[in-house]
Length: 501
Image (cartoon, rainbow, N blue to C red; front, top):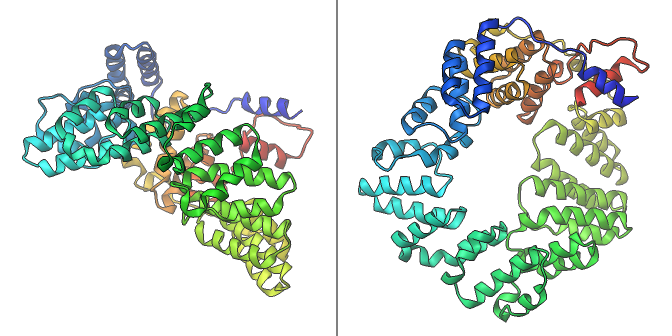
């Protein structure tokens, strides 16, 4: 029944209306898109010109993101449309289009807001620095690339030829970085530049990551001074975990200890997964030890592991004191409503177990401030707190025409995408706008997309706002027009399924 319900909703004809583009402009733009898909950029450009300046810029944006276009045009576009999304990708794909004879200051300016993402871009910037006599900056850029980036063979050779002496001290760091990332081709280029021990370690790490034969032989060839490298331990652990050897995989975490992981964040995903496996297998104490000894100080993995540690301590080990310690650390590490509701609820549960009923109620009250989240609702229920009246979504916002939205080229592009039926692109633009708009204008933008019958975009805007701690109930939970009546289930459930799908 639910599949039929979803199909009915999706096929119910949500349409757009009330946009400024004429049907002729939209038709020209659609022809431009078809030409673009065929790789005929000249026809796409001509049709986009007919469709108007917004369509022209959209096609330019797409062309540059497809690695087409000259350096001068790209720079002009970036200056003109700095508020558009996807510019990091656009810049990356444009780096190969920086001509050798470009003016040094223009190249330096091009990379001033974002460093090169490719070897070709880095070499262009290095050449610009050199031509301006900025040799120290050129060398620093070469070292940055060497220690952090995957590059092509041509760029590898060029950097070695120009900065061989400066890079020599960083060969092992580069190889280690590449091995953690599993970048086989880049790593293999480094073998002649490092010691035999490091080369043997690299071969063993890459072999254990793969599925070929002879792995144990290669591991056996790793010299004793390199055999305890955390990168090799990680690959062995990962191989064991993938093969379902949960206890053997977990043992490597404990052998390494918190200080011997090399890159604790790289281990965190498997730490979470293995802890949950052990929990389900009835090994809760071992699962807790694994989850809690993570060696992290911040980030999403830190927060998730602190919550998991608290959950294990509370629900499996019946230790409210330890659970509360972890839940408080989780609370201090998160900012979004969905996580704050979760933090309040579980802190309340831990305090209840400790007999601190007043403290539990305070914790539940904190969680209940975030009733757009599952745990926020549970916290409110636990504390007997009524539904937040703000969730009715009765707050009003300025008409979009009286805000800065009419001056936004990103908004103009979003409207064009809505009119042409390109919802994915429209979502990309409105979500990007929602990253920075003030609360009032977020509401105005949400009201606009509801007015043109795009509730999906309303949810996208509200979700992005929620990541900033801004809750907009009317747009987070829009009342969508499904176009279908007489469902055999409550309308509230229909709307909930509509929102999810």
